[in-house]
Length: 242
Ligand SMILES: [Zn+2]
Image 1 (tube, rainbow, N blue to C red):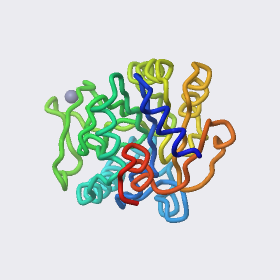
Image 2: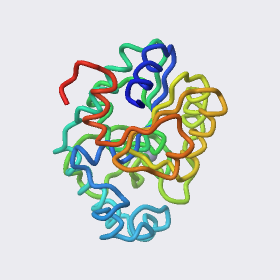
Image 3: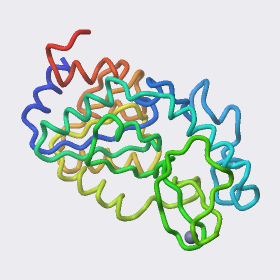
């Protein structure tokens, strides 16, 4: 049975890497981009999350990000986020690679966190490229850098490259892992999909947790179907209540 096999692999592992996506945050009430109630049903990505949209209309883009910041500020990390923070404390080498920008892993207590798509709580100057954190909700729009130039959200937009240093840390952690967990993401899209191939090529056991089967289910060592907030506590603590 997948749950028991995966639990044994995790218990024997000295190095674990985890890749998370929107699914784990959806369980905290954060709207996802895709799916039936996805954000892209209401907004076209090219109008909200591209450098071109921001150059054309920074106020509209900022209003959308400010609205998302306020939704996220009202959400709480769920049992899945908390279980991953606990797994980090009990694993000698651990890295959490997330495609989420909401900061919920941090709030749950995760430390070695690679936010490869940036953070909605980070702002970046469009001129001097200084980066800083600001948790204010709502922001005074549009926010500016202390140099006077316009600030932008510190997230990776469509058409932009992932931060190189973060991404190579993600690849290193993946290649070094004995177990690679894929949580709440179909990971069908590159470059995230590349991490799964890298994990397999490096000999890691790859365990997928998702509410439904995905394009990668056929390639992984086992798939656990269900909400991360239920499955992760069961996986990491055999005495957890179901
Ligand atoms: Zn500046």
